[in-house]
Image (cartoon, rainbow, N blue to C red; front, side, top):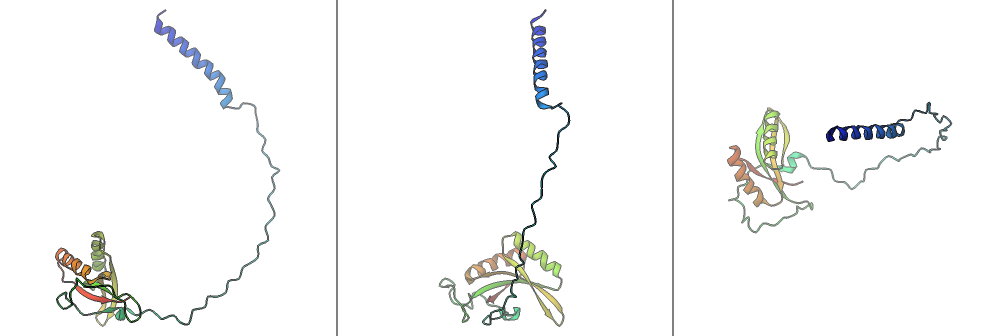
Length: 175
């Protein structure tokens, strides 16, 4: 007999011996298993209903301003303002931060405005839409911002105007 045939026979015998030992360990052929059916469900706990009082609106809340009051329309160019280098963040008389937004466009079709917002968001700008109802219908206006420092928004204005071929408006924004 050749050496390789002897090795194959010995290997086969080892595998058969392992199968004889392992198969009974893995598979239990002892018959039926008994299921424990004597378990009990605990009684339902006593839960008391909790009554929550209706919330009361505080009397000293100032209502939010309308969109017309927040967005003060009119264009301001950097040439009209004082030096942008010395600009520091400021608060309004109500104690709210004074900010600036950039109106990139105004559209009759909301889908067009939404497409522009998607492009602006994809380019990393914080863009949003505000709708204005007028006599000729509803206008969807696209804004970028708000920013506290006017200087940063002026820099973005230049880039947005060049990339999108628009003449955006720099507007005052007060939250």
